[in-house]
Image (spheres, one colour):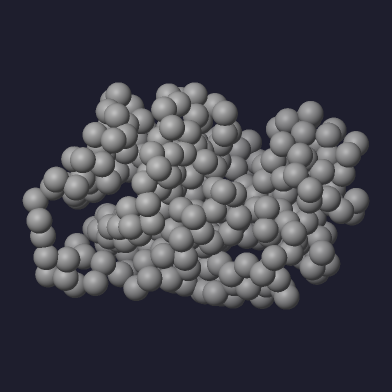
Length: 335
């Protein structure tokens, strides 16, 4: 049994809390929102984030971040835009022996840093890891079989996380490619948002298949420019995460995209759906692609739709009218 503290009471954080509790761990969930903690204590669930999933009574719920003291593992379930702020808030209470595991998928606004860089900077004395892969909170919380990856600069840390969190419904593979796992897990939200736009426009399976395939090429292209391994994008944090996020109605990115394709203004679509990581990630990835000189046509067109007033149907025409190319001239997944 491990003492695990989860920072964040969103759907993913709560689903991990439920899963870890069922596996016999001592679990604490921290939230900055007292109303969420009160709601869970009163009703046993948080319908706004994880409807129908009952949080076990032995899960400790708190708004006191100091209760993170003495944790074997601290799991960050915070949206990427707020990750550093929460890390700094919790830092005074986290001992150097605690392992920090990040689940946020995105790039930090402004710095364009990966979440692993944020946690390493926030906790320079701690060992850190990331979790990535196809994992809807709604299904983890219900005990539906789920398989993801853990990545760390220290393989012993990866093995510890793997052995501690793996159970009969949650299987973890080790992957040493931190950059690839993070880029795959982050940028798939962009493609899922675009896939939702296509669905909202009433386009077909052919369109979505092309979007996902070429989207994976973009993800791999920028990932490898940052030092990632090509094979990672053929795995769980690449094609696996892309498939589940582009095709499921559990995906907030896809749901927001559907609204945009139906004519709802992008900012209003995000307001209706809630946290949509792909919205800000599109802006951040677009800036990163320009900084690195990497071609990302789907990301560029989605950026125009979200922030430049481009009509979705016009962005599709632009993509379909691009100069013809040889798909395999740079090898599988391209460069």
